[in-house]
Image (cartoon, rainbow over all chains, first blue to last red; front, side, top):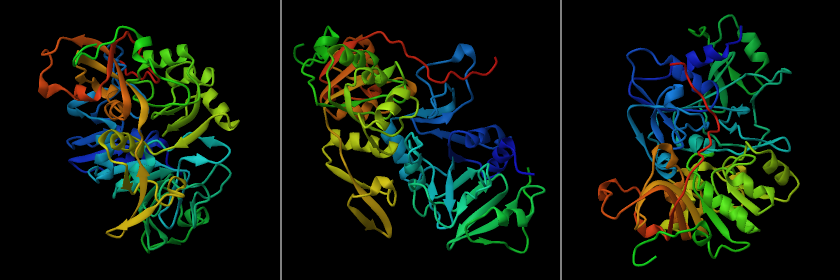
Amino acid sequence: MALTREQLAQRVAQEFQDGFYVNLGIGIPTLAANYIPDGMQVMLQSENGLLGMGEFPTEDEVDADLINAGKQTVTMVTGASIFSSADSFAMIRGGHVDLTVLGAFEVDCQGNIASYMIPGKLIKGMGGAMDLVAGADNIIVTMTHASKSGQSKLLSECTLPLTGKGCIKRVLTDLALMDIEDGKFILRERAPGVSVEEIKSLTAGDLVVPDDVPEMQV
Amino acid sequence: MSGFDKVVSSYEEALAGLEDNMTVVAGGFGLCGIPENLIKEIKRKGTKGLTVASNNAGVDGAGLGVLLEDKQIKKMIASYVGENALFEQQMMSGELEVELTPQGTLAEKMRAGGAGIPAFYTATGYGTPVGEGKESREFDGRHYILEEAIIGDFSIGKAWKADKYGNLVFRKTARNFNPMAITAGKIAVVEVEEIVEVGELDPDEIHLPGIYVNRLIKGTFEKRIEQRTVRSA
């Protein structure tokens, strides 16, 4: 079975380590904040200028001056800090954020990512995604493995305009966890009940299948 | 206004001298921390042909979105323009020129503009459409592109509190682009919720010194929320 959104978020959360500063993109990455293991300290960075993002506010706590990068009202955890957008991206570009998780339309086995524009259709802008992929060393891309019509999104070469070049090393899809090394996808884990053959058939880029590909623990 | 007193008494005075075809750098992220009354004053003035640099372009009917209604913006420099149907329509028809700029690059362009740095190298956008036609250079085996600073004829920003000298304090994530945007204008206009006497702000708590601010005005703010998300108590 393909992973649900919640299971994807759970698997993302397994990449968290105690003391990590983490930037979570909009959508599934944000959900991962719900699965931070008990006893582990993870500080969430929101690129509009907040380190230490908390949960959504209660009705009484809503503050128009306190939002996240998705423009949602949020709260701050104890120990949070506020800073300007320039400082925020200094943290990001300067490599101070330990883990970045974001979505994509396509990833290829050269580590290229396309996530911000479908020419003629969707032109909303890259927001902070280009800075995040260029600045972070430890990035996980979360996405569906294939489109609804069964077209692979894991390609030998991205077809859409790039968000970043050669910067992605790890991709988590609803079917598989893969690393990108030397121009190839390396299959690391498969979703529970999903066969290696299915993953192979839906991966357009070169895929290396090691002898042992364990099921994800979600 | 006299000496270091930056306070002006009307929005008309605050934006006096803003003319057609000028460049305006604006603070705010989404609708958070936007200089909403200064934007409304630009609409009232009817200034046209503007180039506006701001992270977002407002939404339909709010923020910079209101300047699209009478086609006052010629060119928009922004990182994300997603929540605005009128914007999309004018962009698709070619009436509105759009320069999509990565968020961190945009913040740094403004910071550089205010800090006397004409251009800077960043890895952001290398190998993407953003890097096309730009000078690139390799440092320690990594590729970087040269991005140029933004300087506005005017900058418009919003802070929480100020003293009369224009020393500014921002509040929570309404800070966002405001400190850099304000510094990047030849004439920097800031609206605030409260103006206190000089000496009432602790020098250590000032986020942006008044040297960057030319005109200061106290306003009342709607502070519309784009995505009201709550949990049950």
